[in-house]
Image 1 (cartoon, one colour):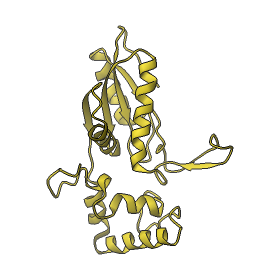
Image 2 (tube, rainbow, N blue to C red; image 1 turned 90 degrees about the vertical axis):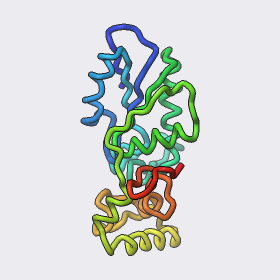
Image 3 (cartoon, one colour; image 1 turned 60 degrees about the vertical axis):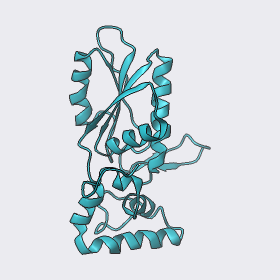
Image 4 (spheres, helix red, strand yellow; image 1 turned 135 degrees about the vertical axis):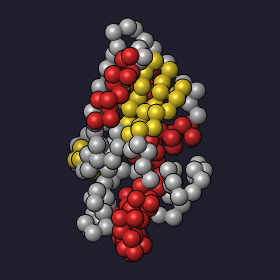
Amino acid sequence: MLCLPSKKTRKAIIHLHGMTSFLWSHAGIQLVNAAFQNNLAFFPFNNRAFGAMNFIDKWNKKDFVGGTSFEKFEDCIKDIEGAIKFLRKKGFNRFILSGHSTGCQKITYYQSRKNNKAVKGLILLAPADDLNSEKKRLKNKFNKCLNLAKKLIDKRRGNSIMPKNCSKYLFSAKRYYEIFKPKSIEGNLFNYNKKLDSL
């Protein structure tokens, strides 16, 4: 949803929502007014992780299961590149990336990998420590849940949904393991128990 200020501009904020959320989340609503006050366009968009689970039928005329439960974190680069490409076609040439919750990990990961000169800044809204939050929530069950996810992947059942006593977000085993495995980039980007140097 491309939101334009009253005066013409070539600068835009690109906003990425958090886990299981969607383009017009509460964080986005708060940010659009700040964008307009600074004569910036505001572009929130649904990326491939919107909602928990979504069935999309555009690829190869087959159902495709998407949403937070099945996303591959590294694909956020493709989502952000797509948003920038779209806005360039509309005449924009300078961008600020904004992320809420997991969106913070995504924009930080993107810029660390791409070093896009057209990106002039990052806005981090509630960058969460998902790894240590999960460890605190599960306590001594954390390793058991992580091992279960790995076993399901090894049995080629990576798309199986983790049991409720492990995952409150209905993560697939693959998604769960990728976030919380040792040396996970996504899980350690904002690991506040150590120096923030995962990239």
